[in-house]
Image 1 (cartoon, rainbow, N blue to C red):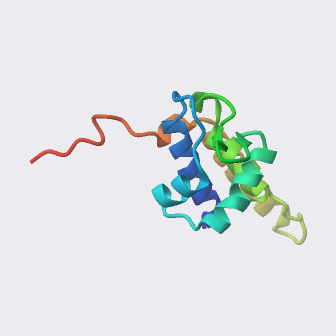
Image 2: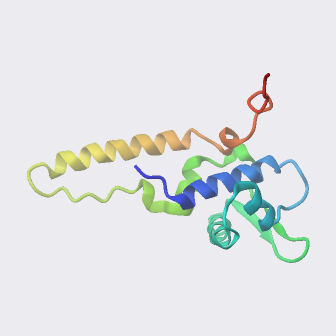
Length: 137
């Protein structure tokens, strides 16, 4: 299974916003793009999808920017995937032919398992942990 680049970028940018969640301010798009090495013009599209999906809030203007709409512990990987690429977890197999029903059933099980697994991860899983970020010599 190939993870769409849009979903990967979305996860990385949301991880940045999660790191800044405790702060008062909003994060500028330029800062997000630079920190996560995401093209700013592509990031605009992703941020719009996430804003429309209710994952983030935004404000325009000089003091504007982006922030999470709720705590990192309340935003699941499933929410992110459904917001950015809802078809990724879809299963639209037609049960045709002699094997069609069995094939469709197996893929439904795979998708259900993936859905359940993605509901088990929140943005907290993407956040830095002090011990994880330490370097030892």
